[in-house]
Image 1 (spheres, one colour):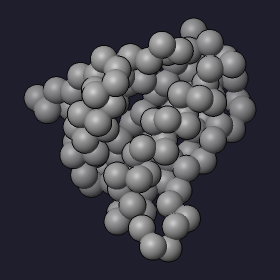
Image 2 (cartoon, rainbow, N blue to C red):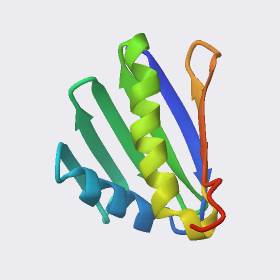
Image 3 (cartoon, rainbow, N blue to C red):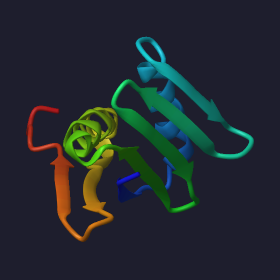
Length: 110
């Protein structure tokens, strides 16, 4: 199954993974374990995994090739909004070598 990954530099990766899973869990199946630092989001078009590392949040989305941009968008957009104060940047890289979407908070009011 095609994948796209992003490494988001932050020292608060667990906090953001937990927040993302809790928020998404209102509409989809979402789990996050503080014990393991790992989580999963299950969308109709694919899945996302969250892996909280000490210095980064590792994100992977998996789905049919045509669904990757949508998965990148929903995960990246929400994470950047939650991490606006920390100026999080999500840059996706697809497994076929293509550059995926890039998410950053460009809103000076945020």
